[in-house]
Amino acid sequence: LCPRHPRADDLTGAAHCCGHNVQITNMFAVAIGLQAVMDELAGDVVLFAVPAEEMIEIDYRNKLREQGKLKYMGGKQQLIYEGAFDDIDMAMQMHVETAKTPAGEMGLGSTSNGFVSKLIEYHGKVAHAAQAPHEGINALNAALMGVMGVNSIRETFKESDYFRFHPIINQGGTLVNCVPDYVQVESYVRASNIQAIVDGNHRVNRALKAGGDAVGATCVINDLPGYLPMRNDERMNALLRENSNPIFGEANVYQGPHITASTDMGDVSHLMPVIHPWVGCISGVLHSAEYEISVPDVAYIKTAQALAMTIVDLLYDDAAGAKDVLDNFTPALNKQSYIELLDRIAKGE
Image (cartoon, rainbow, N blue to C red; front, side):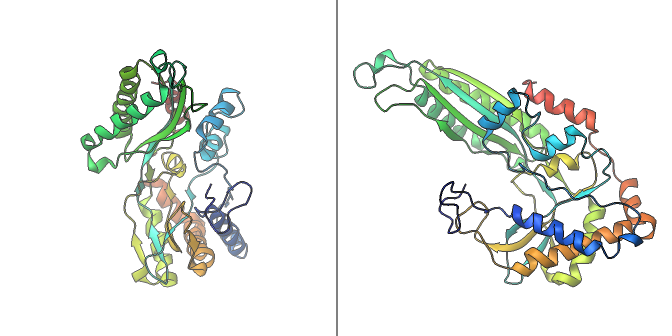
């Protein structure tokens, strides 16, 4: 939601401020371009229009999970579970980012943060907020103290782990003249590697629970599978660079830095070779009211050309390029161990 965006929906406040509509445009553009040469290529190209890339509205999605309507709360997570990637050998996806120059850029993907998704509940005791606050237990105060507790330990996290904790309060009380007896908070604990996520999440939970202990409230934390850190395949990236140089100009093709945001493509990258470039074609920043497509030919044409040409290089000559990538790739997980990992997180293990 971005209700302040000039083109936000008047009723819902929804607006495309992250570029997922651009992803769909690129997908179809790549498909159109490949139609002319598919007979010369050894392999199939599968188009995935994946919903729910942003893991948001955690409370709502978790209710769907508890009702058995879905297994996982991210789009590619669910598709992996359902078997949609069982016959896929490698994958690619693009994302927009803020342009550094008027001409736009192709930023080759590197790594990104993963995260654990969290629902935090504070349970207190209701009482009249003015007449008898001493009879109540203020769950909102507990939540605020818990969040401040996390803020107090931020300096203990290593900068190289790119730790992030960014909570929102879904429910902070019912009536202003009642001591809040129930507060719900949701957040991520993000970091650049799985060990840092596990360690950071343990310390965050300890601080959150201390907020409850301080006022006598009960803190209940529900940790849920988030996304795994992203890993881009070096050989696929090299092909993308070769194809991007003549389209963007070498000066506008660069190796991107670590990204502290997260993507469900990170989960896929633990199973198979993946590239996820970040294409500079917008002004403003992602998820802001100032977001705007500023370099449309990069957003809709040049990026699709570079991706399509990379697919051609992979599948031409009896798929020699793809075979080279696969021969030099070692998956971190297979489908079974991936599902077991997510299930362990969901069980609090």
